[in-house]
Length: 64
Image (cartoon, rainbow, N blue to C red; front, side, top):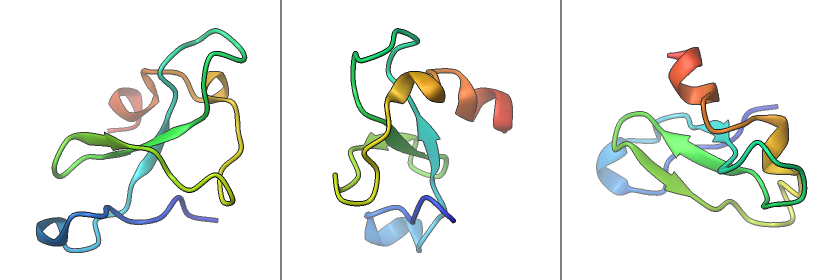
């Protein structure tokens, strides 16, 4: 399962990666990070109702 694509038109459907804004459980839901425009977006709650702490704030930086 992918995490979707960037919503911005000029990113040309760049795949996004998950990111959490905190390492502490129950602080917030997972968000997605676009490496092309370097922005963080909130995905729809129907698709991703996951705690952001499972991914943490450093996952995109370690991944790339």
